[in-house]
Image 1 (cartoon, rainbow, N blue to C red):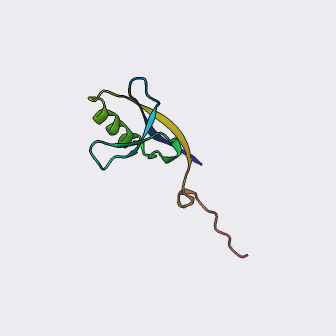
Image 2: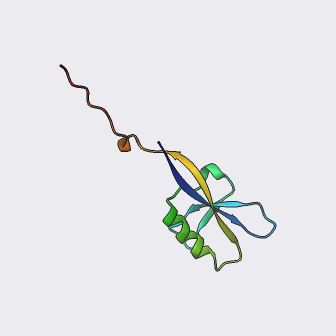
Image 3: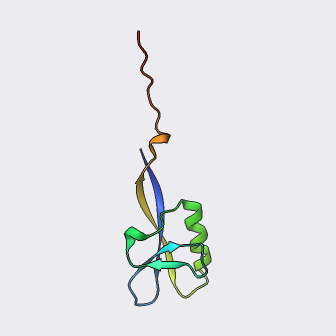
Amino acid sequence: MKNTKFVVKVVRGTRAAQYVQRIDRSPVQTTLKRNLALVMGKFTAEDVVKSLGNSRCIPELVPVLSKSDSHQHQHLAVTKT
């Protein structure tokens, strides 16, 4: 089972696209490497986009497929007969 998570892509003028890495600081910390980007749920990602909306950058949501935790899968119980 797969879940859709999001990373926030930030474009600042003619520079290379960056991705949000940390959101606990002000301003948010970004990175050029997508594999270091913070993967978050839809509501958190939308909040980050709203907070970056007033700056000089263009933020956008990028969907990422992630595997769900094994705890969320339903397991069949094996019983002896």
